[in-house]
Amino acid sequence: MSRGSLFLFLKDGVCVESQIRSLLEPITDELGIEILKISIGSGGHNQLLKVIVDRAGGVSSDELARVSRGLALQLDAEDLIVNAYMLEVTSPGLNWQLETAADFKRYEGEWIKVRFLDGETQEGRNLGSVEAEGDVQFTLLIEAKKVKDNHQKVVSISEVSKVVRAINWKDVSRKNREAE
Image (cartoon, rainbow, N blue to C red):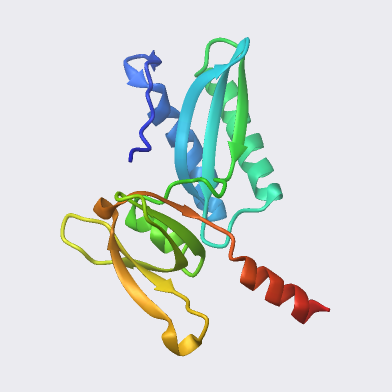
């Protein structure tokens, strides 16, 4: 599993991604938001600059708009991207793969779906990352029908092919009943 970006665009011998990141960090730092990914790719006739940001608890559409406006102003002032481009600032969706200890910390307490290398799938509550030498590990709370039967499982990222956030429909249903 890898989240790396491919950047072939160099300006003055410096990778455009690092230049964009340096423009973006003061904006995201002020808002307490983490930069997850910066990528440049094809967006039809124009290049697409996509920035994915998030933090524990999520980001609002107003915050995404502030990041977008701030970055657009900085990019125009610095003239980093030569041709026309489209800027998309977004937060990760449910299919965003959790891979790092920071990911498991950011989404601690949330429901996740784990697909193991052997094809088995398990859903449960992410209890956060576990300190491990050279490996990312996290604790999964597997909820049973009876609370007393709930159990925790420490999972190594090397055992899984994919971990994503999921929706716990039992929680959604229970909250809807409580709201009525």
